[in-house]
Image 1 (cartoon, rainbow, N blue to C red):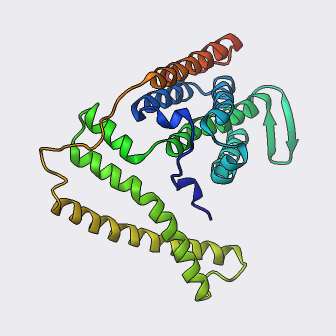
Image 2 (image 1 turned 120 degrees about the vertical axis):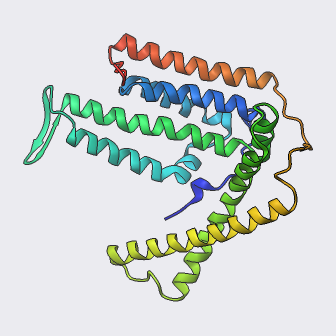
Image 3 (image 1 turned 60 degrees about the vertical axis):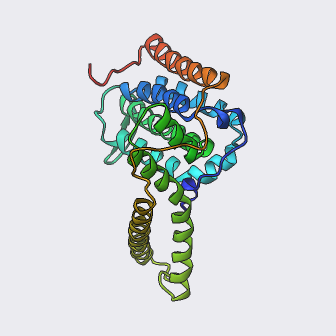
Length: 265
């Protein structure tokens, strides 16, 4: 199983130059809208807007699918499971033995699938267009978050790439010893669990060493200086307005179509 989706490789786009806080605000707006209603219209509008932004973000559709295909599979499984288990109201669309799908159950499944993708894609965009150091600078300088929290988050983000490489190294080492060579699904799953456990152990060891080293170098001190100043520019205005526009369009489209289903209503 690939972990390429976690590998932070910055794209060359205006969105990359925006302040991380404006990107976080835009992501929060579209995510909240999708989470507030379980309907396929609002989620579809948000997802369509995200896909239309791919050229602006400097990300090709194939590169996005290659890195994020596990999310597509998870969304498809979630949509199928919801459609299968949802309340069977409305006209029957398909029936074969225990399998029964109605218009309402299919609408619920599609809504969950689109909702999952619409929530997950902004996180990928943020990962691919945000430098961890810029994010740490913005959190500490603009939001005044505690230095220990900010630097710990920065260290964690920087280690993501190392963990991906560690996963590949563990896989090669296990294959060299013949572990997981069997083609049986159960054997492959057991090999995956063993490799995942090895990665967790390595991550804990690396995090412990890093924490001790950072503490020894005074990273938790009260007084802190920063090499780069976190600033806002005209790009941040467009990013924020873009998030607000997509959110408003999604709500308006769902309300107009009569599909808006407020989860707390």
